[in-house]
Image (cartoon, rainbow, N blue to C red):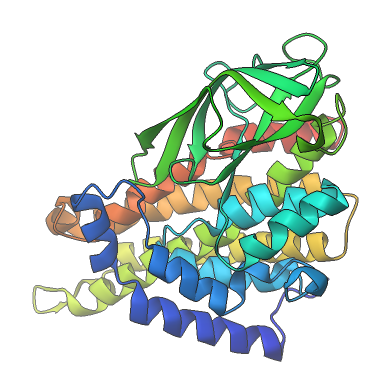
Length: 380
C-alpha cells in the first residue's frame, strides 16, 4: 500500500492549500463564531468549492463528478482541516452523497447527485439519538408503513450540518427491537416536510449541528435508500467512510496547530534565547511530531483501503480514528500549554484548535470506543 501522494495529488494539495489560505483565515472562523452566524459557514465559498469540482471528486462522471478516489478527497479534507473550514463537505459528500451513490436507486442518483455536486443540494445524515451514544443501531425512531409510503416518528440529535440542510437521510426502525441490526431502514426526508422541525445546536467548536424532530412525517415508498429493514450494513459503511474522512480533516488541523506551536517556540525568547532551545520543550515538540506522522500513516492507509475496496475498511477506520483522536487532543492541549499565558486567552487562535479537537474526538466515537472496536474486530 502506497502511503505517499502521487504527482497529481500533490498538485491538488497545493491548489486547495492556496484556496484555503486565501479565503479562510482563522479570522474568518472567529467572525463566524462571534457573529453567531446560524448557518456557520459561507454559501459563497461552498459554491466556489463546487465550481472547483471538489464536491464531485468521488462521484461518477455520468452525474457530473470527477470519478476520482477517496485519497483525492482526503487531500481536500486535510487542507480544509488546516484552516478549520466549516463548510459541510463531510456531511453532504460523505454522510449523504456517498450513501446515495452506493445504495440509491437509479432515480435517486439521477435526481440528487448532480445538484449535490453543483453545490445546490445539501444532505445531512440523521442517525444519532438521545440514548444511542456511539451505537448507530440504537434506534427508537419508528417508521410505520402507510398506504402511500411511510410515516416517521422520533428525534435525532447532533445532526451534523443539519441546520440549513435541504434533505435528511434518516435512520428509522421498521422492525425488531431497539438495538437490533435487522429492521433498520434509511429514508430520505425533505427539510420542509410537514411534521419536521429543526433546532440549531452549537457545538463547542461552533460548528453547525441540529436536533431534528419528526412528528408523523410522511415520506414516499420510493424514498427508501437501499432496502427496507436492511439498512444496518449500509449505515455502518457510511459512518466508516465518514470517520475516515473526518480523520483527514483532523490530521490537517493537528498539523496546523503543531506548525503554529513550533513557530512560537522559535520566536518567543526567554533569558535571551528562543524557548525552543530548551531541552524539555524540544522533547515535547518531538513527541507531537511523531504523533502527527503516526496519524498521517493511519489516515493515508485508511483512504487507500477505501480506494482498493478492502474488506477490512472497518479495521482501518477504527485504527485511524483512535490514533487521530489521541493525537489531536494531545496536540491541542500542548499548543495551549506551550504558548503559555497567551494560549489561555480567547484572543489567541490556539483555543480554536483545542475546541475543534474536543468536538472531533467524540464525533463517530472517541479513541477508547475505537480501540475497543479494533480489538473486537480482531477477535479479542
